Image (cartoon, rainbow over the protein chains, first blue to last red):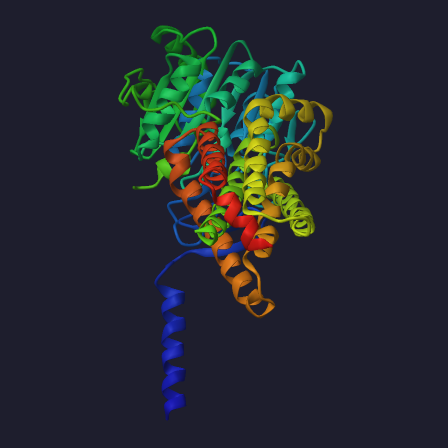
Length: 299
Length: 203
């Protein structure tokens, strides 16, 4: 009798596990890496990569199953806003791969561009290739190493990029050495004289203020694109921010290409803002002072 | 009073080592990243240095041990950490150019910067055991108390540094504080006439 009850409880427990957390979530792959657990699942006609099971808002990368070329996240769309500052980059560096949405789209738009991607986690590279159609080739090279080490080494050689995209953070963990004034200065030495920086960053905690003053201390004025409260992209240019009509010209130039990704100037243009909505006295993050994860927590 | 200083030095030394070890990861990150292998290099160097320190500290306790000399070990360890602040960047840049692989780069850098101060910190515990023990019956009890102080200090150093100190101070400010407290504690132990009592007790 007791055993029967226990069995029933177990069944009920199992049933609750199977139904409550995910009505239509279909896990298709899991992988443990040195750094995290990688989860690939399909849900609502999308295939997503996530680094944690418990928090589905922490999706790293998603792809529409019907239209895999269309961008799903607003932050990746905002990152493409960098092209409004330079509509035809020939050398591109991307720090942080995820599902490879950005390099895949950029290599399709600019087949002749040289794209270097730095990703610390070999397992992420593997999953991106296997499940997200990421396809390295002679023009799209992947370097499996720490972003800071790559940037420092590239800076010592004569390697320069016309566009650099920083996409190495997620909402759970920030590599703190990739969010300091010194790192951004190293990134800056890698940019050509008219090079463009795009950085996917935070906007929902007090880290927002520190991060803003840090970017400002290195790049001066920047475009600050924000949407849906938690997404924020910083766009800066080495030879100064172009004026609005120059951006609009580039937007028109790119309209057709961006439409293939599922958005256009009507969505992106209004986000271009240079308003300083942060505390200008927030302490700049440096290699000496970089408690980014603590500043990003709620306390 | 002597015992109080012996336990205090052991506890503080534990705090000092773990605070420096946590900061060392920070110090190496700009050149070698903070991947698991960088931490592997750091922890290896600290463990090896402590191992050697235990050996040397125990050995040195054979020759005329005194509280004054224990305080000198503490002071020497603090002094040996000063170059981390003064020479850290040039040493790290030199190693960065010398070695491509960040695993061996971080291993060599951690050795150059942290091996000597950590070895000196490792000497504290066995030397302190020698000062405490005058009856072999009590040796286990006293060694246990000492390990308690030292490891409790390590726990405190780990927690305070990673939870709070990095939130308010720069790395070099924390290092200055750690070194300053070590020097102060060493001098306080030596000067108010404790040295005489110590040698009397240990003979």
